Length: 293
Image (cartoon, rainbow, N blue to C red; front, side):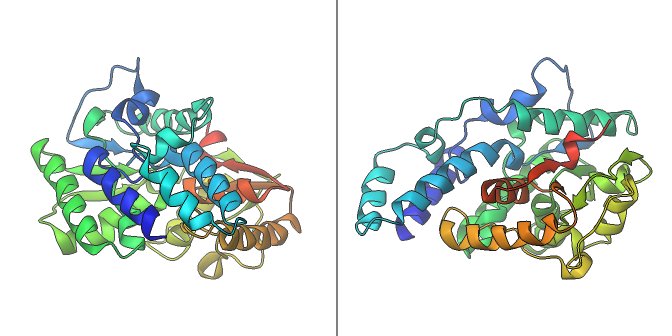
């Protein structure tokens, strides 16, 4: 675990994100869209872009955890790479880029001057906070705040619950931050999305903060919900999948069993939930960004 943490810290120092993704991988979804910067910003925080890398890395660590010398082997392997992303080559990331584009296009119909920060669309720092890396988180969150200030950002639209929580709940505690933060479900809550064949897995940060669960549900026509929903929603197994992959998988498999009692088609609204519930297998896991018209 300490070796993984050290690599995460090094990736933050070099790439400003825990997996070592280069900026070109984060902004690829927007290439060709001619997006300008503005006072109202569409902020991805890079989390959806990280999903295929998270999945590959968690799978690799799960295999290593079954070997007696796994800790030593993982340490040697990780010490040789420049970034975790370079360790887990991914074929196509188009699915995750498409999720982001779909959400942006839907928002653009509601917000005339919706801008994008391009190379300054950096990670929110959520994982650093979750792992208790206080100094790393504090330094990073101030860098995010400085970017918003530099471009005179007045409003931020987030697309995942972890990033939304960091900016809305934590940022004001660590930095001088006077920016309105909204989750996309708050902007699109009057949207009508056919969802009668799906069961909804509500991410914890959506179910328990800012009434986002109600906003999300209002978008999804006739979506089904399991018994453990709302503030009692069950965990997807994240964000511990890279550090404790087997525990994470067991949690995800338990949740999938609950959801499949309702439907084989599972709808999520979080990249971490998408990664973990997909990795558990046995269900068709789809993100809300894939069904938005």
